[in-house]
Length: 403
Image 1 (cartoon, rainbow, N blue to C red):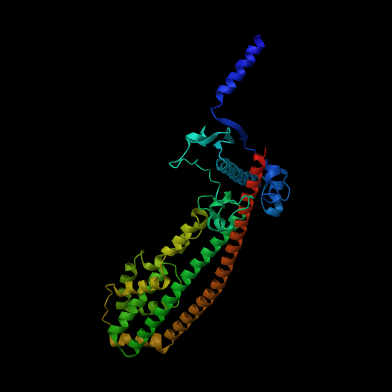
Image 2: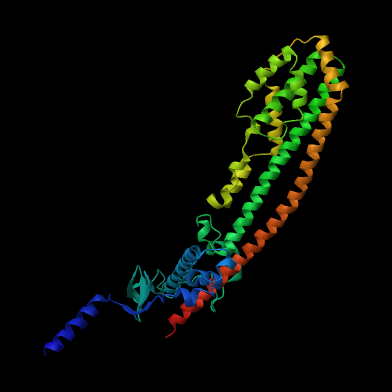
């Protein structure tokens, strides 16, 4: 009698704990990292290195690093399985709760995490509320290609919110290619800017030579001060004009009044000059902040030709010194720079420097195009990986729902 009473009490308690209208419960089938994940959703070599210290030299990782990588990838994949389980649960009219799906009894339907009688859930026309399946899937667990083509990135690891080390191998490689492409874009920006600066310096130097030959003191000094301003700006910004144009500037600086003016100019070149843009600050932002952050940073640098032009506009807008040089001093400059061929020498070096830059810019165009193809290839592989994972997860969950 006592035993019967105890069993009755237990049955009563169990029944009392099950909310009204609830029927069967399906638990999430916890996948095995070694049996279900390794070699299926990740290259087996990573797992061999992580768990057995094998193939580590092939993948270029130490056992500890490989283990961290495998565990992180498994965690993400496992969460994907759980999310899929939850979606299938609710799509089939169940109620998802942490790691299980509870279905309502016949005659009941799910509403707000509880089961209510079907007749209590009618709309204004008296029709029962329908449960819609996940829109990404066809009935056979394949993804709807038109829907997937639009939304696939939200199922992938190409996401700025995911740390680089936590992404799939395919997503990591896409990001590495993006970073290399961004660095080359920055190199191209600097080259295009310097080409334009050099062109304007050549134009200004030719104007200076014309004024020097014709003994036009005012014009030659205006050109000379602008050449000095831009030269000092490029030197202070560690850019590439240091060297050639210094031959003109420093040679003229031997004249007392011009030397005094050069000191004024050099002290007046601001650190905030348009040329002082540091493109290196953008490098590395792809991994740390994501592709969108890096591309925004590149975009913020502006038009390289406009940046170069701004440097000359800065020079033209300055209160440059006015040295009252004599005819004798003009003759000295003419002898130093024109007669002895210094100006011609600088022009040859300047044009050669631009030819080298332009050749490199042509190379960069091809390299950036190749990296763009690599990005497309890795993104395509990531798209395939994410689709295969979605479809495999759906099939597993449908299997669990079989009676």
